[in-house]
Amino acid sequence: MTGTEEPGRPPAFAWEAPAPPASTPPLAAGMRPMNSGEILRRAVGVYRRGFALLLLVTALVNVPLAVINALIGSRVANILTPFADYLAGTTEPTPAEIERFISDALPAIVSWLAGAILTPALILASSEVDAGGQPKVGDVYRRAFGSFLAILVGGFVVGLVVGAVFLGIIVLGVLILIVAGDQAVGLGILGVVVAFVVAFVVAGYISVRWAVWPAAVVLEGKGPLEALGRAWRLAKGSLWRIAGVTFVTAVAAGIAGLALGIVGGALGAALPAGWEGFPTELLMILVGSWSAIVTTVLFLDLRVRSEGIPPAPSSL
Image (cartoon, rainbow, N blue to C red; front, side):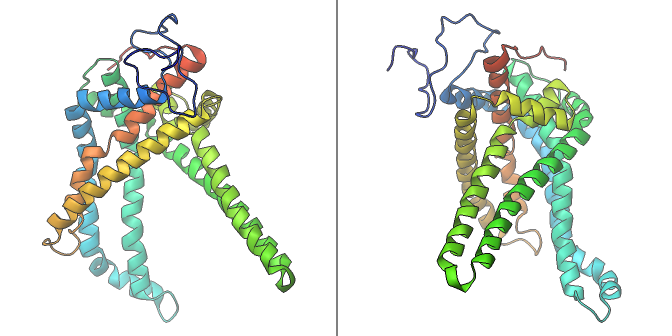
């Protein structure tokens, strides 16, 4: 233990300096700059205290979504066959390819739209639980609908920018390979490998800088572009902390998801076609709030760390 750490506090990760000691004047009741271990411990505390609320908030979106996905998976081919035959005619794509595309695309679109309402609802619920409140589910969703469009647009912008940057760098690497030609194949292949590495690094950097933008939309009422700028500024000086917390969060969610997927797969093996994944989707409700909780706590910590802004009082 170093002289700057407190007894009983989770240690800072190796990549970061310890948070200021307890002697620092408090910025808000129960909220001060935290190290990575404390952020995760606080998130676990929010999950435990708000378990029933967060489970219900998640279920209200994900249960109907699981039913819709199951119904689409079992019936969409029969419903779309006449339309697919008409659209395909004698040219490509074939009716089967059109059916497969739509049956895959519809659940993805529905999930994207559902996520745009579930994400703000979970962030709102998490922030209230973190502040010691227990809001009503109806109030959470009433406020969450006000952030729906901004979350939808912001998610599209993030996906577009990160995807464009990633693909742009990869294309540059492929062009190097083409220009190198047969006389410098090794150099061309090296260029492609370097392009992949650079693409992952740059896309990861952008993702980290924008990691908490949904919380800026929901908790501060920012528009999508304003929230992205807000998140970018707050992340300054905390990139390794954000990356580390995000990585640990993803690993924890992945392990839990794998375990739940095994159980759900066993339960769904005996179900009719299209419904095999239904038990797994239901079980995933147990971890559906985890990412939003961590994003919320991380955002509140960045505000306190960067600007000394305490969490806003409850308005639910």
